[in-house]
Amino acid sequence: MKHDINSSLYVNNLDWSYGKRQILNKICLSIDKAGFYSIIGPNGSGKTTLLKNISRALEPRQESIYVESKDITKYKRREISKLISYVPQNTNIDFDFTAMDIVLMGRSPYFKRFEVEKEEDLQIAEEAMKSTNIWHLRDKNINEISGGERQRVIIARALAQQTKIMLLDEPVSQLDIHHQIELMETIKDLIIKRGIIVIAVLHDLNLAAQYSDMIILLKEGRILSYGSPQTVITKENIESVYGIKVFIMPNPLTSRPHVIPLTSI
Amino acid sequence: MTYIAKKQLYRLIFAGLLVVLAVLMILFSTVGSASISFGESARILISHIPFIRNFINAENINKTYESIIINIRMPRIILSVIAGTGLSVVGAAFQGIFRNPMADPYMLGTSSGAALGASVGIVLQSSILADVSTNTLSIGITSIGAFAGAIITTIVVYGIARVGNRVPTTTLILAGVAVNFLTSSGVSFIMMFKPNHMEKIMFWTMGSFSAGGWKQILVLFPVVLIGTVFISMYARDLNIIATGSETAKTLGVDADRVKKILLAVSSALIAVIVSFTGIIGFAGLVVPHIIRLILGPDHRVVIPFSALAGAIFMLICDTVARTVISPSEIPVGLITSLLGAPFFIYLLISSKKKVKI
Image (tube, rainbow over all chains, first blue to last red; front, side, top):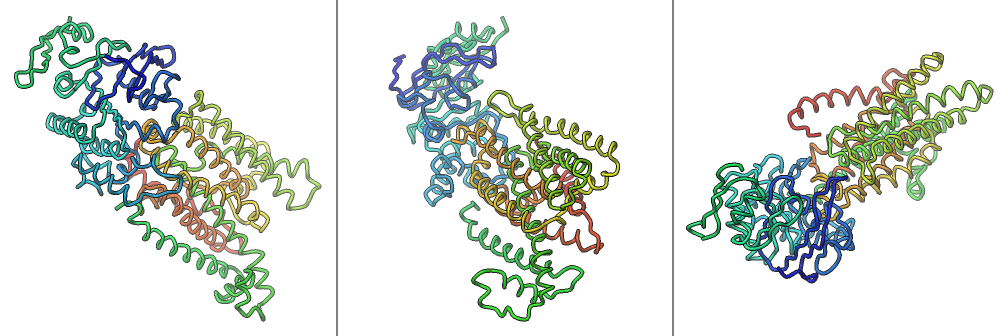
């Protein structure tokens, strides 16, 4: 991989610890081209922490993450939220906002203190909701729709932020297989239409292999492998990271790798 | 329907409620042992407003009535309106900060700290300053004690809850509960050892506007006005914080910073109000909640409407408090609780399944 500070996203020797426990260890990563990038790895390997550092939900060390060639810690929070959007794993919302209210919150980085939504913002929100197929839910209470629908509302909010980079933390882990595929197709579609960079934490290796342009494999806070699904999803990599015996064969339809777990080692 | 689509409607309702408040203020100024008609009361009030007074006939106003309205009833009415506004706005802000509809302005121990400070003030005032008989000074000492107690308690609670740069809301609530018990037992101790002050302390902890005069208004009005405007500035940020602290950060809102600023402003506001009026419960919990039920959760709506509805609610409660068993009166805190507690219970029952902490 070309490691270039002028990439849209450039991570250089990123370390992160919670107290004394080191979670991320010298992560180096460059992402420049639009596409679907997935982060895989076992529980506790630092996937979510990496995502939170990039979104600045956690405060990374100086000079370890660069967005558009500028140190992420040097940006104002509002500026960063125009460049990077984030869809968290937990999409609980405490008050009974409507879906439309939530999506419009994505426009908030663009407002001054007492400014209110303009016609333009409503249009952007509408467009975002239509592209994730939730326009019909606009007046529904966010706490009274299904988990899959709520996930789409949050993704529409991220779209309304109109960022070049979108981060998704386990977007499909709580969805049934129909909604999983539907959501992945929607995301894929957005990447093609809008030319954005999507970085998603995924648990399902086959889903990652199917949809990713590039895969980042984490083990104990380090990047073990970064590349196309064919180069990352190999018998050696998966067995060493997950500690199980697997059989890997090319998917007969897409020729991408397909993982069949066998026994634990 | 979005916020801007409803904005005209909101403005209309707000204007309507303003008129209701003004009419109630005049109407309730006619209620009391001396019977003064609505028209006469309105005429007296208008004759005291600069510019507008030139348009009415200010002659043959009964001087006694004028004195009752201007010096006795109106200050008290205005004070209850201001306090109701402040308590409700802080309630709305706290419910937003703590992301919990059950939050109320006193949950950081402000009230019990104020009670302890006030109790010390009440005891001091009669023992050490026994020969100083001026009434204004004695009120002053109780108020100063209450204010100091409120501020110190809040700072202690905040200090306990703080983890480095952050203030986790759960720890904050727990610290508030713990310190509440501590200061309450302090008040009980004082009442035990100084039983002759017990009645005074108890009355203070139930809140009253009976000491209300223009002097208090002069302090309270600017404080509540500035506090309310300031908290309103963060209304949209509070909406975003409702989606979670970390998510808020990715939407450009530094949740920790906003929380700290709002906690500081709100606590100061509550401390000032409590030191003048004693502890008036439930208004700050119930009013924002009713507004949220009717008009939705958007803080850009909840905060201004809570301010107005809080004023109306407190005005009604205080009028009941001072007239029901006239010539003596019921502490206003009793009335707000009497009206607020059943609602709170209803709230608990109906939201048992939904509440998230």
